[in-house]
Image: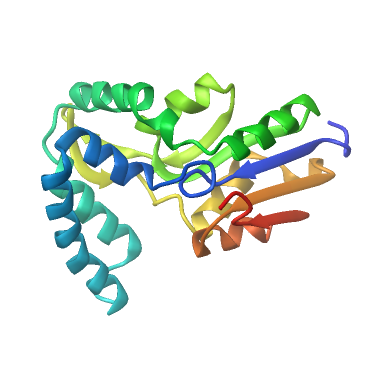
Length: 199
C-alpha cells in the first residue's frame, strides 16, 4: 500500500448525528414517558460515575440493562433496523455527509468509530458504503443482556480498536473528526484532527 493512502475516522454521535443515537433509539421505541423516566434513573448512574463508584462502561451497561435486558435478540434487531430506516436519517448532519462524500470522491478511506452499538449503526454505515468500528451488545441464549461484549468503544478503546484494525504506518494522512473528550485518544492518532467541526 502506498504511503500516499489517506484515511478518515469519524465519530458518530454528535459528529455525524445531531443527537445521541442510543437515547434516540430508546425514545423511538419506548416513547417519551419511559424515555424521560430512564433519564432520571440514568442520573443516579451518572452520579456514581462522577463520584468514582461506577466506570463509564458500567454506568452505560446499567442504563442499557434497564431498557433492553431480557429482550429477544431478533426483536431488538428489528427495532434497530426500523429505527435506522424511520428515524436515524433525520438525525444525520448534512455537512458531515458532504464531507464524507468529498473524501470518498478523493479516494480517502472513511471509517466510522463509535461507542454506539453496531445493531443500530450498521444499517446507516452499510447504506453509505462505510466501514465501522463500534461497541457490541452482549447476547446470551438469544436474549439481550444489557451488557456490552468487550469494552465500550470510547476513549482509549477507540484508539486501540483503530490500531488493531488498521496499520496506520501505511497512511500518509490520517484525519479524525469528533465532538467530545471520548475522541481525545483517537485525535492523538491523527495528522489532522477536527473538533466539533459540524456543530
